Length: 394
Image (cartoon, rainbow, N blue to C red; front, side, top):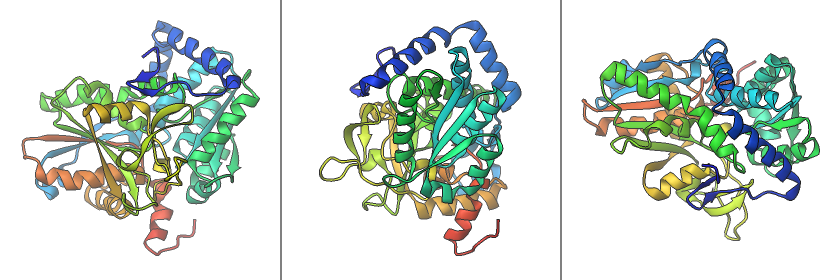
């Protein structure tokens, strides 16, 4: 995808001051991505630092309880730092190091991408600054502490809705200010080319492993792969190697918030329209005047008004399905998986678990479903307790 286009989506809609940095990054990535030394260094980090491959776990109790499809969980929650984010961050940090950069910056919503970036910066002796919306800092205080513990500066973003969208805006401005020594580690398959392609490539390790693991366990491919979608990096990572396999349903689970029919939602493909923002053309939640609309989800990591351009393309081509899941359903799924399998999922991942609870009973017992469990839920326990009316002393 040298052009950075997925159908009409993607591209490089950026100011001239950013073009130098984006061009430098594009050239470096496509030069190094298949270079044996770079691949070997990244694989070593993924295996011996991040803990890959992550397990593919047969959720026997959940399968029996729902009474339909056989359910497997791809355990990205068991990666170092607790989510899929480390896959992409290690790749980008290693690339930045090869480019001679001394400093990493990143935006974060749920905090997992910020923690992963701070972790990689500590490992590679790089300066690190994380930009995070003020509202998200309140929701994810534990991750703010973890980032600071790892040596990162965490900068509070108060502009706009003080959430993920605004953190991206400010991070892009910071990148312009220090292009020479800084690499912006975008956390999802969004932004100007090459970010959607590059992040997808680093996250595709998820579907490569699922394919190998499910063939070993079942002797065939799954009938459905499910993942939550905000910007969409864990989801495209879980989908990528199954895209050519037409018999495998690909289902992205968006954050509907209070309901996709309401204004307080983040279900972009379900409710959005094509627009241009954050350097790319794709679907965005917009108001009646075409302005980027405020969005809402209980999951800070899904609280983004757009979706990666490859997801927009897969939707338009009919290759992937995108469904809306409400806060209520996600919280119930968070609690359900915890009590059923002894696994506390991230509230983001819980959106996929919630849709699986709807879908699995409608599937045959000889069918197979894989849910990408993108992260662990330690970070969400206090927030979900508050949602249920209990204040925890942290």
